[in-house]
Image (cartoon, rainbow, N blue to C red; front, side, top):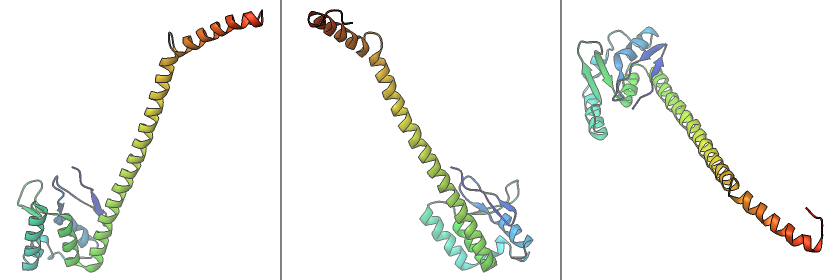
Length: 170
């Protein structure tokens, strides 16, 4: 499954294949825009007992790892589910929380709009496919040895019958 990519304050926030967003990218976005201090790193946020409890409960309810910390390597940093991302944004600054929340809400809404367009297009395709199939069936029934031949044979029979009463009719 692919998860929506978001950009906050011009910084693209990476997302992994489990739907966890990189809190370090979010922190860089907040610092660049003056909405967080350098020392408000995700590691500081995760030290809070309330946050630890929240993450444990979220992991249990979602049946997945809500926060994953990767030390070193290409994808190093703190990766967290959307609810933790919003909670981290709130911990940084209320205005930043609103920005992050609205960004995720807009991404979801755009995704739903695209799905609605796709569903509508699928409906048109299915309807037109049925119509074309019905036309093809009608055409097949009309062709050689089909309904056209039946109607022409009936016309010839009626013409022969009419010749008795109206000579010279064709």
